[in-house]
Length: 121
Image (cartoon, rainbow, N blue to C red; front, top):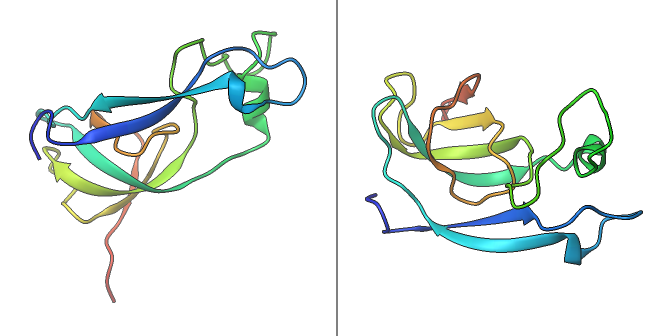
């Protein structure tokens, strides 16, 4: 995979919800996926974990976790497959659990704390 050969669809926080979040509070963006550099991965998201605590992250009120800033990718943990690796700890095809946010193809990221599981028997 090389730069600009793939598109990353991602949801960003467009505005702070008043009450329950609505589709208007989010914006779908498309960005090119950067190629992995040394120590980085390009991933393909398989599953997102959508958790109740995320509502608090949409608010700018004081909390135990910092808020997601307007125009930033919504935070969240995901199960993803490695599609490009320049990190010796991960191979193409590995499954990882990492905080990648609400995006389809996070790339060019150092996956600190990612947990790897190799598929197979």
